[in-house]
Image (tube, one colour):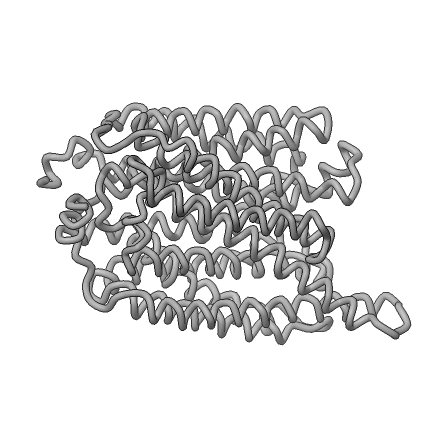
Length: 486
């Protein structure tokens, strides 16, 4: 199909702007609440053991329902999915903003995750089907990848500003300011196009995938609180793995599978999904432990902490734009993604040098810039490769896999690194006399241990993606025909 004949071609850049706004809302919502948590806890009076559910409720609903959300956007049309997702997200955020109790706030966060699972894959698949010309596609994915990678840091800054100068509830209400303009713009610009010839709802597959992902995310979230050997952790993780194995068996036999295996058996797409998961796992290490380090050790305020992440966003955008617009069309993803992971790993190694008496400019800033540049080379090319050449009927579920990998990777990374950090602190403290200075040293030891593990995860990802991804220029038309021929 000639791109100029596509009904969205003339409005493609306006569509990109509103899609980026929607994506920013979904991504920053994963971190904006983190900074508001202490204030929300003081206001609503819930205990330390309960506070993780404010984060986990969103991650569980979002991560476990993404594949179903992607298929629903294919089935009902991306315009309907986007508008429903944005409107529902705004209503859920408003409910969270007025929440009179802990239970209502957790319910609102779960609803945000549910509507986010419908919204995120619909946004990425709309981008995939709107930009088909390689040069323009690269620019569009550069913008989208920068938003996806930098949105978490924007959430930290915005969360700090709103919490410090207004009230924690505005960290929920602010989503309305993103959702309503995005919904109005996309309602005006998009047509609802549905090709249902190859699409039907795979209920057994949907149940196996959703429950399996729920088990994995829930298990890792419990590992952080209860430990790896706790019964609830082990049962959840084993059940999750078994259900995902059952999901693969169901998909191999289904007439109309939720996730056609042709989507994930392509080498470039498989490598790209892995890259997004690894980036998600290690990126949360930067946000989580550097946030604590800067606030508790360096004495930064929430706003100063958010501002401290801005150089990382700047370098991430430079890496994202240069890789997507100049390098990806010429070389493909194979040289870019592993190189980005090596750069990010080097940044993590640099961050292991932070100490109790370090300064931001010498101990944090150079490492942040390296990590940002590295993630810029990983995220945008991976997102573009993961959705390149899929049939239109599979675009939603292929896009959902990107978001699923990012969300599950982030959840697993947060739990894994938090548990490793806590174990390192316990080992450091063993047999020593406690005191204020010692507590600070123990905390920093926990952070640096987590940074070493993040570096190891990224280095492993670099080796695996170098072996998985193909060399050479991406072939849009050929792959598109191949995907359609299956």
